[in-house]
Image 1 (cartoon, rainbow, N blue to C red):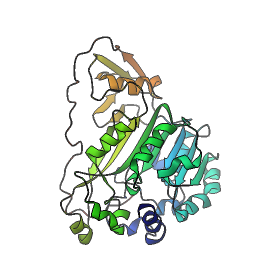
Image 2: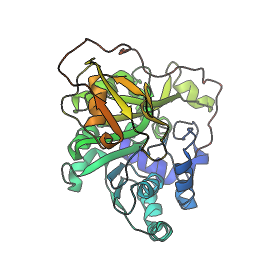
Image 3: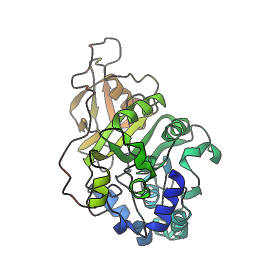
Image 4: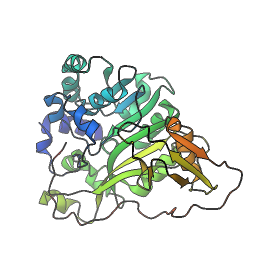
Length: 348
């Protein structure tokens, strides 16, 4: 039911983001200045058919090869194509012909506006990426925006993403999660599925699935509770709390299950464009430029063994272990706020 309903809901039922009945498929974050400027260069029809729930524009991606899973009408792909520049590339994969038609229709328009052409699209099911004959270890970054919840075989998506990433590469994606396992009967409701609620993973199951797929230490970047303004939808999902969250998963050997302390530290050089004063690795690591910042072994590797290495100085090694790093916990990671009275918000 999942893939057929997704194609119908996003290809036929919705004509634009204003038709949404919840704010699950809306981006509420205020975009950084560079992203706002890039968004102004995206065709208005592409923006009108945008259904993402987060900002999937990671730092320091100039020259990177990027794969966008569930690229839809192409808004994120065309944003990222500007960020990676002429020396980078962006490939979007989507299963909905109507959405792909919008993205393809404006390829030349964007190439002329950007001054280069580095964006392409493929029709395909992200549960079956193996069918697309994409080469192993061929992407620096994989992004996805509120799409993985729509597919049935989520494990297949994470396994394929791990295979397609280069060593040190990153899956940076936004999606919808629940504070408990969603009742299977809700999957049969086409509206709940299309609005990204019925297929939402329980956060604990997501973390286990990510680790099983090879992403040993999932890092939460941002999160927000979802508002469900439609009373019919709210009644159907009563008892569940839903969250939009952005995670980053690194393909790195040697990451440990917990945050272990080896007495290490890093110092950010302030050299990442748009984040000169503060680099945010995740929700718990906002690293101020120039300050020596203590980190666990996993964080050290996420910076030392990835595209971020040139932007940091590194102190310490793995010779002496001091136990678990302070603040490493296992409770629900999302911030809880009462969103019962909230209606759908504006999408960027």
